[in-house]
Amino acid sequence: MHTHTFAAINSAFMKYDVTIIGSGPGGYVAAIRCAQLGFKTALIEKYNTLGGTCLNVGCIPSKALLDSSEHYHNATQTFKTHGIDVKEISVNLKQMIDRKNGVVKVTCDGIDFLMKKNKIDVFKGLGSFVNKNTIKISGEKEEQIETDKVIIATGSKPSSLPGLEIDKKRIITSTEALNLTEIPKQLIIIGGGVIGLELGSIYARLGSKVSVIEYTNTIIPTMDGTLSKELQRSLRKLRFEFFFNHKVKSAKANGNEVTVVADNEKGEEVSFIGDYCLVSVGRKPFTEGLGLENAGVQLDDRGRIQTDEHLETNVKGIYAIGDVVKGAMLAHKAEEEGAFVAEIMAGQKPHINYNLIPGVVYTWPEVAAVGATEEELKKAGTKYKIGSFPMRALGRARASMDIDGLVKILADAETDEVLGVHMIGPRVADLIAEAVVAMEFRASAEDIARMSHAHPTYAEAVKEAALAATGNRAIHV
Image 1 (tube, helix red, strand yellow):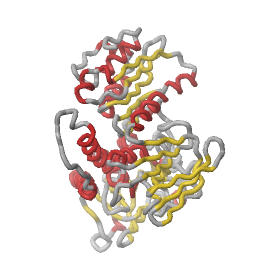
Image 2 (cartoon, one colour):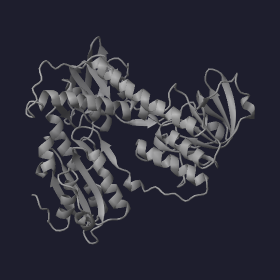
Image 3 (tube, rainbow, N blue to C red):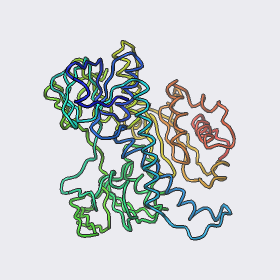
Image 4 (cartoon, helix red, strand yellow):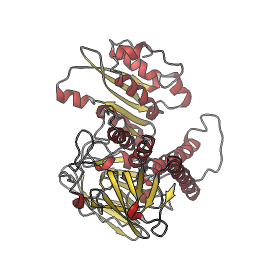
């Protein structure tokens, strides 16, 4: 990796084929694919480490803490049943956070290595447009580079609500939740989406009482309703409380206490008191400081960068990917788009099937889905069949004491083509890939039902659900 300073290089003469602004999963994958395709490539990152939200304060650190907290939970809740007697178990939160930071460092260092390996020039500083072909980099020194094409991959940042002042001490976002120095006694979470539930799971396993205040009538509202109900059931075992149809009006910190005020479904004002409040109401595109107006790049009414079917903006040669454009805010969606744009630039004809980008919630049990939900099929008037199979009917699930959850397959009533697969259970974050592969090849439920699945495995639930969808032929229920 070549990290540049103004003193070292006369950047006025630096010309690149492609410059990527932002080094998250979308940006760094785009940079690598561009380099593989022979483009002279520059990558600009305003923070000290590469990897964006996902690697630094998102996907990777949250999974590290989720795994650590799951070990503790099992030690206190299930070891005895397994015949493992352990005494005097306690949480060393500092060590847990230190391990998480170590995982993040190794992962980010890996991106540094990949940049060096692929001969990508890395600039540290805020990248902004002087014009469509000139990028200013404001770091320790200010410099400029010329570029033929640009990929904007600046990602997103946490959203807030009117009346909520995030002080980053007691009223926090996901970023601060990954670095707490104490386990909350009472954690209030505003928003019942993926991020809040994952972070809530970490602290609930460590002993926090968790209250989720949600504006709608369900958690994980974009996923199939069956998954929401099943996940609620599991999380209640961790002492989660859910307050649906509540509109939060304010959150105020006073010393070590936070008071959240909301209107309930009857319009009555109610208060919640805790020692920490996590604001988890989604994320918004990050475009500040980019100087988009200098290049003439247009935004839509939700602050996202407008793109065409090739992810090119209204300005020829400027592309945008990931959280900063429309679609699901997912790291793997950004990665696909990064590779897609690089290949478009090289004259290839790649494709992305946005319907088949899986969504995952890394609670335990995990939740994963791909394709259409039952609610979407009903709304569209599509005639469909359902095949469902409970995890508790699997020998593998009973052996590991992971019996919560199910697999649900939705197939076209006439053609039997699989239209959606929805899972909640152990390791379904990995298992959903089977459904993605099947649906990419437009498999029928019968196709999956005829495939041999190793026994005993969690994956057998997919086969059994497919059997159930093809005429109630499931064997083990």
